[in-house]
Image (cartoon, rainbow over all chains, first blue to last red; front, top):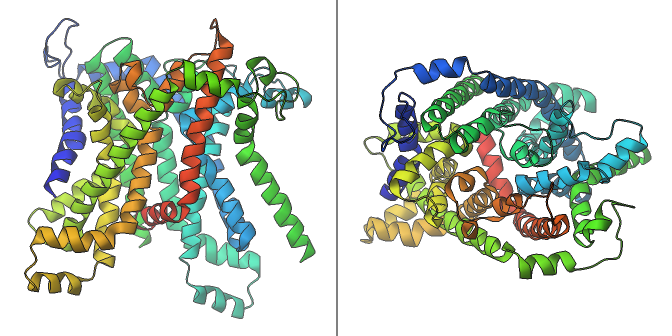
Length: 275
Length: 275
């Protein structure tokens, strides 16, 4: 127990407290300690009026609005499909859908990035369809990223939903069939309601994951128009590494952690309400 | 039934094309020289060559990044599995003062995604002198709130109290009970946890990006993305490193996931059920 307590304290609790403390100072560049020049809540007021941060926040909200329903609907459809095809083919489908989850996100992004560039297969396909083929330009980059994220994460969600479908007692199916339920009714009135808890869980993960998006935009920034403020996490990295303003970065980080707490808290409340 | 089979075939084919396309592209492209990768049929072989692999393995730091990834992910996985086993056993099987507070802390930590505390961890590590060391990545990666939670459920459900009591009656010390009895029951769950932490560390990008400065310490994702492709003098050589490195990394990870699918799934499934 105690090795865990030490690691847990040092690498989870302490960093959180430390960052929270840092966010109330504004140390000059040459200062030996980051805890010099106490400024109270100034870093947080700066955050509220920082347009670069809000641009990232806007992108994040926009992505969530697109991403959440798409992810839920796709995962649900695929899970219901695979669940209705048990046996060898279903098992094959499950492995196929799950494989991208095993691909490191940086590498997945690099591959899609290459496929998007001039001469790559996605570019060629779009030109053949007479659609503007360069998806890496500013107006479409968000959709290019959306595709990468869906590709990476749908499999994970499908596995979770399949576990949920497996947990439905067969007696429920039997009694529904005795009542003469069609397979559509079975899906609509038995399977989907029984999955509600699982759907809340993956929605929560999706919202938090979106907010912390970093690997994909950071990797794509070498190839495309992604800028340092594209997502809040990208902005923290920029403020830390290029501006070297640790105290301000701490305030942004803490703001984000607070938001993910709120989302997680609401999720847990909803989740408990289902029990 | 004919129609149903046709639908199954079409949907499965569509899933396979979408989810496996980037991997197929990677395989084909890794066997092409740069000039051939973005012209002609990008999804089929064209004058296959092992140039990319030869170059990446003999002329670049790729072998070093691979070894770094194996060392850091391996140690994080081992340490993480043991630490979580001890903590989970204590939380799942004993009543002690502070147990509830501990459980609460673990569930809070469950909600804080590791990317959210990458920056705080970095700032703390600067003070502890862990920046630019293997431990700087291994130690934070080994603290798994999910793992602790997972093991505590596993402990309360699958380690029979009678066996433990019998051993204690025979005069076995608590340490002995843990090492020779509990660990035996924990084995499958610890394998699951090892894979999850191993893969998480292998794929981690943000933490190494903050913590590791020296190119000789880089892990695979950081190494591959540090090789810029745009506007470079030798795009062909950088392409070689990126595709060969990606192919090897994907092969290792996907191989691990598919071979041990049973273990991976049980971890994800339980995570969802208990949320």
